[in-house]
Image 1 (cartoon, one colour):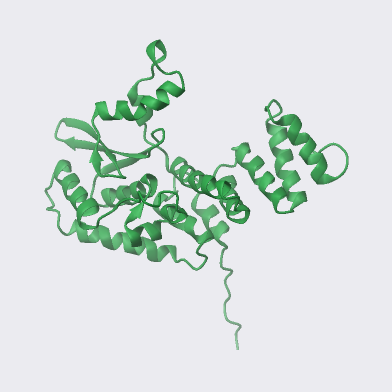
Image 2: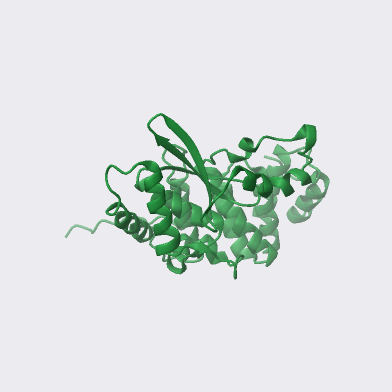
Length: 293
């Protein structure tokens, strides 16, 4: 009798790595859904995507084929924010579950970026052009409205469902401008902060939200899981490699920690923390000067 075929099931990290291998094939919605597999290893991301598709299909059946973009936007806003009841989780903003798409789908509560990812997927499926905007301090959604020869943009706060005017956007940006000296002759135009964010950047912002939550709680195992993903997603972001090394040191994986920190030191020889980290690598390796590679 022939041996049954056996297939190696990829680990969650291998799966994520395959999803983010290149920008052209990167599916934001699938990669975002897969982030939750660190906390929920048995999560079926394809089932999550099917649930999202079912919501989109229900909406598509309601919209007339000849509906113009502005009409489609009204249908979407009414469906997403009113009928489905998606909104910001004001009571538990820093709950990690707000960063997991399947949890947001279930509870209808999330943070701006996860609400935006879901909204953008539904918008795309009904023929709208929607992108995420990494606005300082608050993730937003930008939609391009094309009607005949008319072109315009609508900016939406996914936390509230409110369409933001230029004046409201300027007000939101005020604290950031002041804290970074971008006032008076150094003022930066609003449009600079409304650029569409690539899918890789959206995923990085989602992961960094979780990174900060777990770091604040000194939850090293969960923080390490997030940093593994950030290193895969952003292989040239050496600060993430450094941070992973410091977490590995916290949990006693000295050799791996030293390798990560040494990789950072090699690429960032002028970093402010260089001397302190050289000493840390020496301590972790136990002998001599760190071996840079």
